[in-house]
Image (cartoon, rainbow, N blue to C red):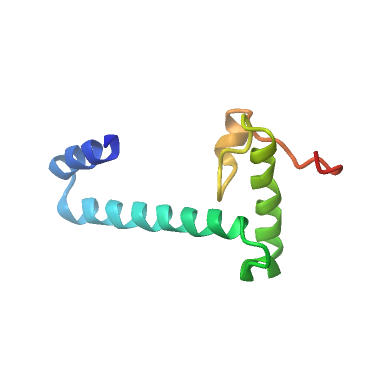
Length: 93
């Protein structure tokens, strides 16, 4: 609901082309987050052939072990900025 209110407000403030670009980019970003989050939890995902995916999958599972860390799904910039980033434990804990 808050996103709908913000979008409605931006509709009246931004030019139409910029508003549509914002909506499309936000939708694409949300979709990518959903796809990656689901793939992290599928054993044998086709994405596991990529080293970047396996690394982000490790970082994602740190969040499941430590709920106050690694909130990101794709980019951990904000986790580093807010000091919630945590590296995977080599022992698996």
